Amino acid sequence: MHTTIRSLAVLIVVMLGMALLHGAIEAATGSNAIILGSPADIVYTRQVTGTVYPSDSPTTPALTSLWQTQYYSFNASIIPSTFPISITPPLFPSDAQVLTYGIAGGSAVKVGQLITFVVTSTDSVFSFDYLTQKQAVLEGDRYRVDQIASANGQYRYISTVYFTEPYHYSGFINETPTTVSSYTVSWDVLPSPNNDGKFRFDSSIWLTNDQPYLVLLPVVLEQY
Image 1: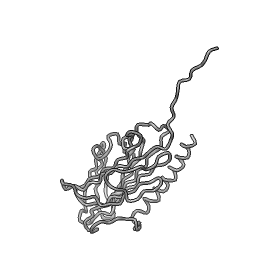
Image 2: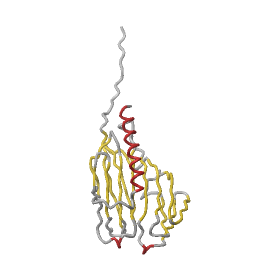
Image 3: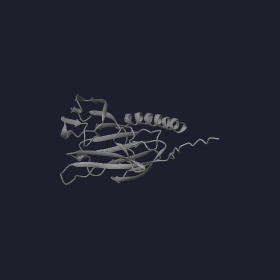
Image 4: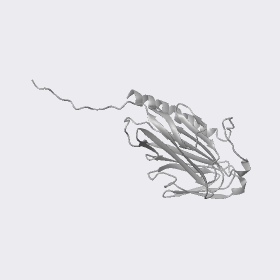
């Protein structure tokens, strides 16, 4: 119980930090940013914030996670442009529940799991978020948290995954994280084109549960 309360307190602090981060997106020019190649080749920036919620049980088969996505800094060469985003596999989990979506500098229409954004300015910003229980799944004794993105043109991909006790980062698959701290793993990259010409980001991290396993043994009552 104490672990859960402490974890939720840390999570609240993380969520407040995320709100401040969104307000500072376009002003951020920190030295940790990695820009590979010419900015003229980047058609937009995609920023993803994932929050993995803790569970009271160390054997929970999947953890609930919230994923918030923003697109901004659009290249003038693609204005105006339409972005039909289907919140379905293979780029999104099959149980993704869209919570909110919106745009500043354009229009947005949602039909089922398809959200169509129309961008009319280089200063446009659109966003959506969803909740899922299939993006942080238990494999063996640790959780695998996946991220996938794909597009026809070069884009900048900024992502941060937040988590709390009792979990800690224990490795990655594919794209190497840019920074790792006690409760965050981040990327700031320009995805490379695949053989099919698509620019794809594909990375997973492992989270290990520090909480000790509780084994319940049968109680035998002796009779006298």
